[in-house]
Length: 114
Image (cartoon, rainbow, N blue to C red; front, side, top):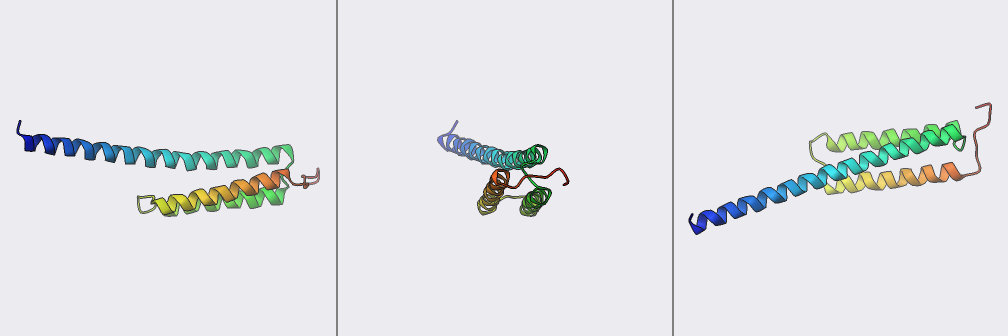
């Protein structure tokens, strides 16, 4: 095998490895945001079940989750999720998580009439 052929083969293998690594990272990060959304939905349900969220709080938090999911769908509509879009989703998820945390621990509790 010629030296030039070996260089081309090596370059092709490196390029394929980098592409696979990038694809795996995108898939892992996509799974990460989906796992966060699922955990946040579970936390809202738990707050409803244990009475730590009022109906109004639960409704508002649920709307925030739907908004995040729609934003993700919009970002993915072109087939690619850029770093900026991913960062935007993570920031929104962070804010949603903070809202859930605060609302579940505030002094408001669901009354038996709600």
